[in-house]
Length: 141
Image 1 (cartoon, rainbow, N blue to C red):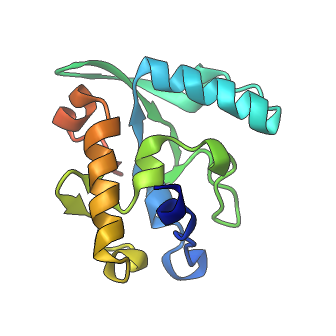
Image 2: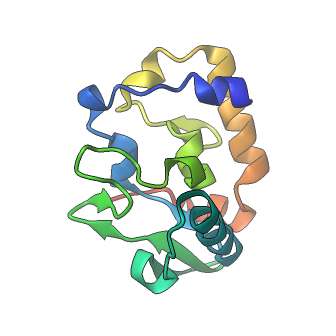
């Protein structure tokens, strides 16, 4: 799947980082992994309380990436992700937002090869926490 992922070169000028206007939700373990990876990759110390807010759902407690004026806190002024190499799985799988749902507002969603979308949906099914899937927590803010 790495090959498919690497061909997802977005045209940020066209979409203005629509994917980063969704609120990705992570488990506590995913937040820990993200903090560790960001520290190693970018030499940044992330304080979880500054970048994530606790969300209570039917399946437990989750951590939503904080949004500033409807934009992901990790998005810079040029509409680029400041932690791109370490971004959460939900972000990597975009425009897939559920096992059988694609965000059609994303310009790439209309031109991605069917095989790539199938692969992204398969990864969503395999890699996203079951409780997060049940909550449908890739929220649109």
